[in-house]
Image: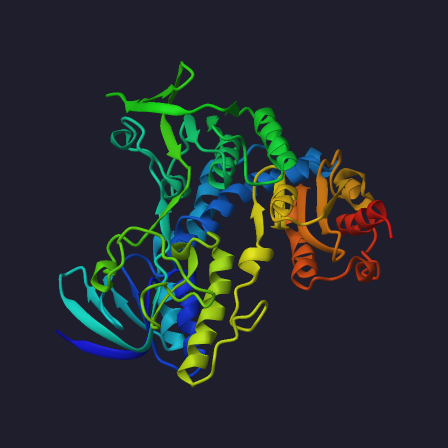
Length: 473
């Protein structure tokens, strides 16, 4: 059995694992990465990129139809085949040649197969042909195996061959009827996408639409989905599912009644990919989330095992996992050189933003862009806050952007420090406005200083001035 030694071994070659490996190599260490599927991970092939490609064509068409002059030119309907073809290109047609080439250029060794921890600083890789290779790490092993869609124990669901986010993102055809269980980010985005592509969509929103967002955000998305023809069933819960011989899916609801569809998408949450990575060999329970300390070391596993990205359950977002990867990789390099890790609040190796300034965009119609705490979360955290709302559609730049522009902005202010701790925007194309709010929150910029950040006129960013005026000096 061949044995190879590296400074750092990373299990999982998604965006998080790639960034960890790149960071340590840039710091002068050697790294090997282990991957059982496609190099590039969930985001590249079944999540971030292909799903946003599915959504973008319809968003561009909607935007054109909201501007007189362009509206008259946009007389056709979406070309579904072209949309799916563009999606395929963003998923690199589910081939990872380009990602593998990047690993080679970065000086990162790739081992294909199932990686399992086999002891302290040791990882055994089982290839598709059954051969095994043992890798040993001088300094650290990093688990970056991500998560998979959670399929709940609803009677008959698994036998009905449900879609998860993977099947939805890579669908080769648009179903005539689609029922979606769950109205969080994935459920709401895919309901938006497939309704635009021609499906008759039923959205079973047991906990409401986007329940983790500010309430007004979920309300606006729910209203927009309904206007687009989606049947939004607030409070509805599936208790049984079956698929008949003709392929039709039948969903029985707790409150009575049944929904029939050609496909069913389950989008209620995620489960960690830790079932088969050898955790039992070091006394940890397989299949669970990995609890970590402030430097992302796995608790009760010595000083050599780290976990980054979804598996540590801090924030299940690609960009936040990459943020963790950068901090973790630099911390490993520092420790390898005999330096302590700087993990104090906002320190070089800290992941403070995971708790205070997580940005997220939901690419529904309208878009939702948020960072930091919601009003309810800030209150629950014990902060003395003031919530300031403003009608985004009344900003001059918005009226130029689209006819009948509708949206809302909210900032949540910590009154004791007079800094923003939460910010939410709802409206067309608000995603590109979010980073200004992220900088204001991360930088803890006082409101008095923000008055000197003058927004250009006429842009939608003028909402910053309007929010400050509403707050008052």
